[in-house]
Amino acid sequence: MADVFDDAIKRLYTLGQQADIPDNVLAHLSRPVAVLCSSLHVRMDDGSSQYFQAYRCQYSYLLGPCKGGIRFHPNVSQAEVQALGLWMTIKCAVIGLPLGGGKGGVVVDPKQLSKLELERLSRAYMRANVDVIGPDRDIPAPDVYTNARIMGWMCDEYEIITRKKQPAVITGKPIELGGSLGREEATGRGAFLCTEFLREKMSATASGLTVAVQGFGNAGYHVARLLGEAGYKVVAISDSKGAIYAPEGLDVESVWQQKQATTKLQAVYCQGSVCEIVEHKNISHEELLALDVDILIPAALENSITMVNAADIRARWIVEVANGPISSEADQLLHKKGIVIVPDVLANAGGVTVSYFEWVQNKAGYPWTLEEVRQRLKDRMQQAFNEIWDYHKASAGKESGVESEVSLRSAAYAKALHGIKNVIDVRGTKAYFSREES
Ligand code: NAD
Image (cartoon, rainbow, N blue to C red; front, side, top):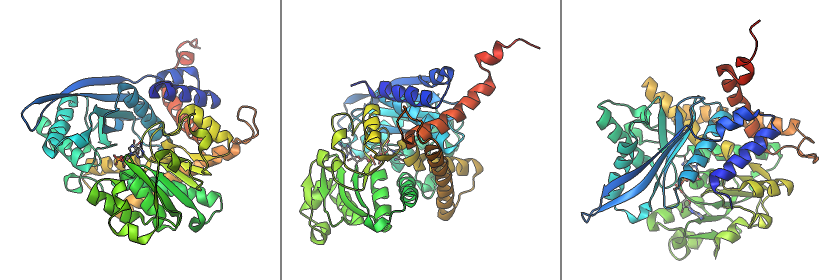
């Protein structure tokens, strides 16, 4: 299979050409502006040295300073941060944020590090990237296996080096260091809102809908919690170590509390209150994805659904909380099967939207209330969802000669790419510069 960046570029061209985006725009977006590769030296607790490969990708600052999370994971690669940087570029344009796209990562299994080693690694990342990061240049945030505390260490390191208080350099920080209320839940809340908007369009009732969630970290937990609170029936949840299934529905909060206490999801099978509340069984990762549910929520990593398992998917709707959980080929197959997919560049955009709010609050030095943050998030998500939905409906019958609407992903890319094209156009294109003066 093509690497994740090649696949992301293939999708960019397919969807861009479908939306009549000129080649100069697609060419501009098919490479990052810069990628800084570094080797982080970390002193381990036993006195030894270890070196960790790290990346910061500044994909595009056409629309504003680069914005994107930092991932700590053994599978991080340059191709992955570039793909994630491209998707951040599209996502910011989908929501209409004055931000470009970026992403960072470190090749590490953070679960093998002590707390002190993790702190040293986080600070080393900021030291290595300090010359390219900044409140008006490139603003990181949390991603897989990084969190508010890690953002706090990185922010602190940046401020020590620059000798200035600069909370706007990083988002997803602890509230005490200038973080925004509502940022922690924002990705999950944005995905929850998208699910609700879709449900309303489909005239369905929440209480009749079953949900399976793959990945039970920050984003997966909050979307599962909010759906459960709204009456949806969350029947399956997985994390990297395993999956659980209960047709009568899981108590999301209990599963979360058990996971916190025991650090792995499978531990809920035989201890704690969940076992007493519902009957449930262990299933495999593959079985969770293939469950006959109304809504499947991939909230883990890229390429969970590829041509290997796309034919097994039985969900009616998929809400992509993870970035890039469906390969471009599998995406087309699922669309042809009639599965409605709310794409990552919309469904998980709640995180970057509240990160943007955090940045605005830091720059203004004026924090907002939780209600303000939630209301503004809802307004932004509703507007983007409606625009994308309307485009999708208005395009009925135009896609590949097949009698169907374009997918919500095609519609989201069309919206984003037209916005980016307008910015490229006003800077001057070949058509402008080669025009004869009259
Ligand atoms: P996280 O580190 O908090 O959680 C990741 C979860 O995925 C963990 O529970 C882990 O056990 C699970 N996981 C890993 N491999 C798995 C597998 N093979 N099967 C099932 N579960 C597996 O990370 P997160 O911040 O929740 O991010 C999850 C996804 O959401 C990523 O794709 C990330 O890029 C995307 N995302 C996150 C944010 C954010 O604000 N955190 C914003 C936008 C998008």
